[in-house]
Structures are given as structure tokens and as C-alpha cells.
Length: 153
Image 1 (cartoon, rainbow, N blue to C red):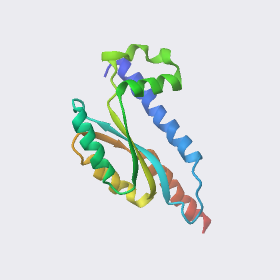
Image 2 (cartoon, one colour):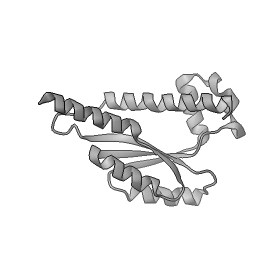
Image 3 (cartoon, rainbow, N blue to C red):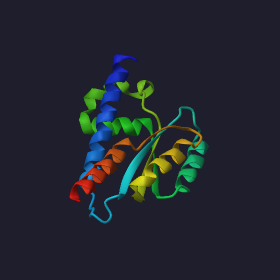
Image 4 (cartoon, one colour):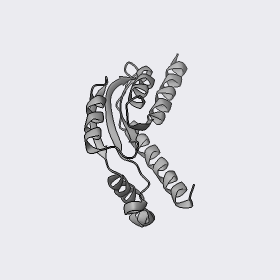
């Protein structure tokens, strides 16, 4: 991997971690509903999909249980978000054709039981055109909740 790509991969990972932490901090949970959460998963797409394939994929994602909203994010939008978060001068080398980010769908999952996250992630990953589904941080959040519930007894 090139040095530029490794640097960008680090920043993207940091952004995902930061957004998950912010998301977790704003959740209102009680002991009764701790294992039901709202979360925004990120679905990274394969290169070369057409606009029509994006629309078909979006409708297939909406058909999955617990999906409340789906938003397509272009590589340029993702890079602009990273620039706003970390300072735009860090990403000047990645503009235009040098942008290594993929198209992605940001998928809002609502009131999903933690035990169903794996099932939903598998359904999303099985769709044509999906490269990767990122729900790993929220799985850690659910696991931490399981430990918290165990310690309360």
C-alpha cells in the first residue's frame, strides 16, 4: 500500500470511531431497552456501479428490517467530511482522480436489538455491489452493555 493510502485509511478509521463514540454518547437507554439501539451503519460499495445500480441497491437496503433511512455518500462528499473534521489541508493530495474513497450508503438502523446486528449486517453484505458493511463499533457497544448488565446482578 502507498503511504498516502495508509494515511487516508488511518483517518477514515479515526472518523468512524469518533462518529460512533459521539453516537453512543447521545443515546438515551435504560436497563430495560439497553440492548435496543439506533445506529448509522456504513456500507461501502464496489467500484464501477452505475446510478441505476445504486438506486436498486438503495431499494433493496430499505427492504431489510430495522432500516429507517438510506443516504448515498459520494467519494467527494466523504473526503469533504474528512477535511471538515480534520482540516482540509490534510487531504489535498486526494482530490479528484486520486480520491481512494468508495461510494457508500449511510444506513440508519432504528430500534434494532443488538442480537440482530449480525443478521442485518450479513443481509447487507450479501447484496450485489456491497464491498463491506461497518457495524463493528456498535457490536462492541452492545457487548459492553452485556458486561454492564452482568455486573449489575
